[in-house]
Image (cartoon, rainbow, N blue to C red; front, side, top):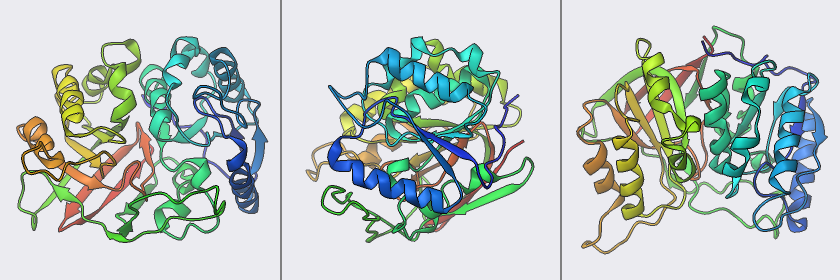
Amino acid sequence: MIRFPAPLRAGSTIAVTAPSSGVLPPYHKRLDIVYEHLKDQGFGIVEGGCLRSDHKHVSAPKEQRAQELMRFWSDSAVDLIFPPWGGELAIDLLPLLDFEQMKASPTWIQGFSDTSTYLLPITLLTGIATSHGTNLIDSVPRQTDELTRNALNILRMQPGVVYRQNSSAMWQKAFADYKVDPGVGYVLTEATDWKILGRNPNGSVSFSGRLIGGCIDTIAFLIGSKFGDVPAFIRTYRDQGVILYLENCDQGPTDLFRYLTHMKLAGWFDGLSGVLLGRSAGPNPSDSNSLQYAEVLEDILGDLQIPVVYDCDIGHVVPQMTLVNGAMAQVFCERGSGWIDQTFA
C-alpha cells in the first residue's frame, strides 16, 4: 500500500539540496528571498552542501549528491526535502540511492522537471508518496496565483481528507529573469483552457484513480529499468484505477511522438482510468506541413478508449497543481476548466 509521510505542520523543517543542477551566485539572492518567505510561514530551513554551486550541470559529484539526499531523508528532524529546481542529470543518482533504507523513514519530497527522475522511482520502489509540484525557487512572496501560493498545503493534509485544486484562470508564456529581479513572481497573461482529446469541447469527463507520473523528458529514460516499472504499478492498483499524468518540457512534436510511442509500447497506457497532460513547453511548428503537438496526442493516445485531458495545470508552463504520486484522485473537466480532488488513502 502507498505510505504517506507525516503531514507538514507549524515548525516543520525543510531541507534544501540540489540532487541535479545547483544554484549559481546570480540566483543566490532569490534563494535567500525564498528562505525568508518560508520562515515567515513557520518553517525551519536546513541547507545542504550540494546547492550553491554548479559545474557541468550538477551541484556536486554524484556520490555527494546521493549521500546528501539519503542523509536528509533519514534524518527524523527533516519533514520535507525541497530541491531548488530540476536540471539535467539526476538519473546518475538512481543506482546510488538506498531504496530499502528509504522505506524506514517516509519523508516528503517535492519538485518537478528533472526532480521527476527520482520522485517516480521512490514511489514505485518504496511505496512512499512523493509530490510533483512547484519548485522551491518559485516559492516567493510575490507569487499571487492560488496554485503556487498554496503549493505545500496539500502536504499538511491529514489522511482521508479531500483536497481540491481548481484549474487556474491564467498561465505564463515565459519565465522572467531572476537575475534582473530576484523576487519576481509569475506574469500570467494567457487564458487557461483544459482540453478533452477527441471529445466535444463542450462536453465533460470525470475519472478517478491513483496518481503516478512526471516529466516526459526525463522519466521516459526509465522505461525498461526497475526504476520505471509503471506497468507494475498499474497492475497493483488496477482495481482502484490509475491516472498517468505527464508534462513536456523541451520536446518538439516528432520527439514527443517517439517518447509517447515508446511509453505505449512499454505498456504505460494499458489499464489506466485516464491520462492528464500538462501544457506543453516544447516547440510547436507554425508550418502547417509539419506535425503539430495536438496531432501527436491524437495519433498516439486517441485510440486509448479512456479520457485524456490536456493543457492542464501541470509542469513547466506555470502555474501548476501539486500532484502526489500514489494519492487517490478524482478528476473533472468541462468547458475548458476543471478540478482535481486528492485523498491520502
